[in-house]
Image 1: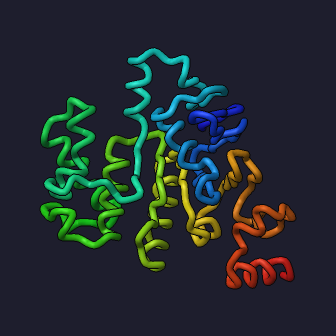
Image 2: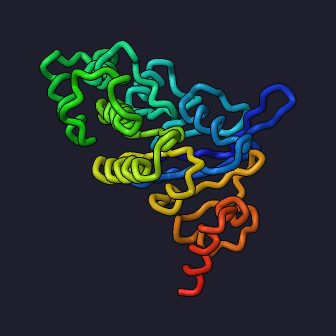
Length: 253
């Protein structure tokens, strides 16, 4: 579980996070949504330790990040997996080498142990014939699956995903959503996803945090989002006619 209490963050005269509090639950897909400039990227970078909060705390299963010693922070970072928006694979490394990179960096595992783990996670994300290919030789959807494999190869407790469906066609995006959800449940990970994709919200939103102008405007589940009378979240989620019709049908049922 990750708990954020009264998080505030400013850059110069611009206050980006304004007293945000939230709990991200273990074994669930926790989605953070909001318009550009709402603060969700700054929140994610604060969770990753890239930004330091001006006020407030972030705790990982009771460990308050700002109170940890440097060696404890380093240990915590080994428990975190990250899927970047553009996959962020190393162009000159094969799929095999990309996935094994965190194990070579953060463990003392032997080469055979690393290879066994790499083989396992690549099979888990349904990539069994891409080991020796370069990122440029595989599709965008396959690159995202490699990025997920790399993120979970070190058995993380916490998984962060920044716009994991960016640049993907709808069918592939659904496959990636389902894969993240399955892995979260299977390994009991605390997963936090920044997304603009309303399909993701409706499909895998166990817990949804909606940020607006640096404030937490709303929180709830994918079921509760259909019933809410909060106009800000209604305007954001149901800006398209398709989702308006889905909501109307849900409310009538």
